[in-house]
Amino acid sequence: MSDKPAILVTRKLPDAVEDRLRRDYDVRLNPDDRLYTADEMIAAASDADGILPCHTEQFSAEVIGRLPDSIQVIANFSIGFDHVDLEAAKARGIIVTNTPDVLSDATAEIAILLILGAARRAAEGERLVRSREWRDWSPSFMVGTQVTGKRLGIIGMGRVGQVTARRGRGFEMAIHYNDVRPLEAENQLGAIYHDKLEDMLPHCDFLAIHCVATPETHHLLNRERFALLPDGAIVVNAARGSIVDDEALIEALKSGKLAAAGLDVYNNEPDIHAAYRELPNTFLLPHIGSATHETRDAMGFRALDNLDAVFAGREPRDRVA
Ligand code: DGY
Image (tube, rainbow, N blue to C red; front, side, top):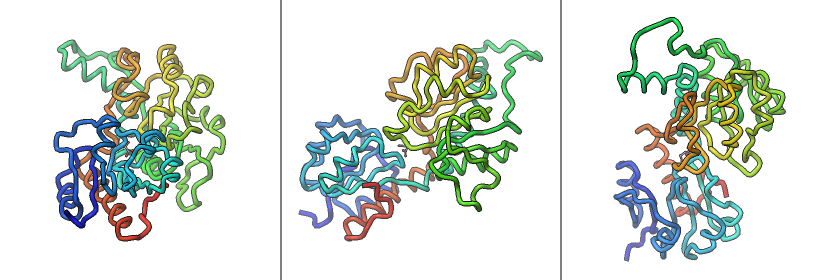
């Protein structure tokens, strides 16, 4: 028997991360990247000391209650931890960690791609070229919304939101933001703080969602709040689908209240609301905010640093419970 801690890894991770796992742990990998059912995951975790999951595994109170007593830590390969019932983990004495910081640049890149793709009708254009339906050029063909110089509202000015703001400034955008508290003066860089979301929305030609998914932010963007945006505004979401009420967003896209939406995250992924696929004014990506080689390696190493700390008896850097 190995004297190294036993770790269940629920998904296929980058090679360099799996190499380090093999070196330092008695590791149970998932080379086929098959999605475990809750029962399979609990069985695979038998006698393990820790689990390194992704946001694709749900740790409800019921699942946490059935984990083996040997589990000391859930070291997530994700910044988001809305898939883990933190109170249930705390109640069982299980440490929970995430991977902040390392995915801010990659996720902000996707937020900017969503802004540009939605504003400049990239999905429609791409389809036309691929399907050979593109006929000619005309002054009225595929006219979209200009991004440069517009007002960008950011909900959640954490690490990712701040990078999106910096990239937005590259397009000479005026930055507005809403969060529970304003940034330190040296980090404001001219951004305008609104302590109430309702006060910010009328100032947003573009609205980027970067807040954390919690019970408080569930369906934060609902019918009433979409109505507060200027006509023709564009909404992008690179955070979590649950922050948006799908029916309200779809209604606003259909009525023309919103010009477009760019979405990388959804309620009930990957079985998303069918209307998003049907609407011409949506630009849709499959939850790839952090999907770069550099960032996925960094996320894995950050999760491993957290595991190493727990098994060395130190406080992990990214403890969320
Ligand atoms: C995250 O890190 O939360 C990303 O959404 C991928 O899980």
